[in-house]
Length: 270
Image (cartoon, rainbow, N blue to C red; front, top):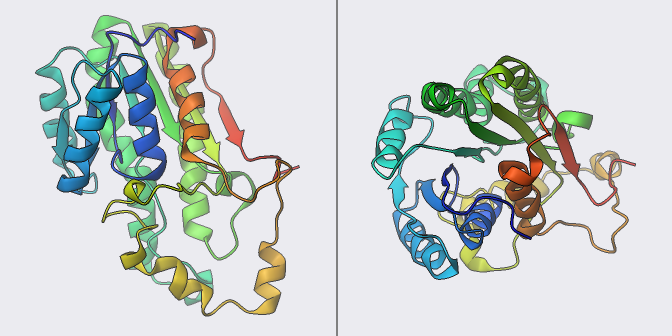
């Protein structure tokens, strides 16, 4: 299906791993010039080559950490050297720790909030003046099913993703008069099968130890509370299943859709 993305210029943050990587490749297959943003330079250069092979006219990689407040303007400058930005995909996110809120600390709260919400605010704020001036654009944010139900032992992460969802709805109201659409997806647990999909900055990279450390301290009661099932014959989503919806929302075929948050959860929230 032609989604109307050919010839457009898109920025994809968090592009070097998992969902972000799949989105970048999906946009490339649709013929979009794709500006790739991530922290892992080696993974970024590999992805850039792959995107061009898949059909992107150009796919420059910008090494940047979105928690750096100066990063968005540098990313925007690199993108606008190729043309006006038509699409922004805010994919950066993750949890910096997991555990009970009572045992947490303010530094961890702020890190979770900034990684999941602050990065979205800063990058979106950077691209909006150009989109408003051209009366055209699409923003797609990556939220989480955690924002809809609250993931156990991920209190601040869940709240920050909830902020992403609310921000999506309000921004759609504000920007509709300027011809700009804003939507979001809410992914369930999504894990790539390809080891190349995990850059060094990814929380899923074996060296991060985030999930193995948490698993070692999970009590049986905690496991029971976390228990959830899908209805599609497997427990996890594939990143490509997120990328297809994002590409659709970013393209012209979704021109009458704005302010929506789409759970992609395999029925887990039923």
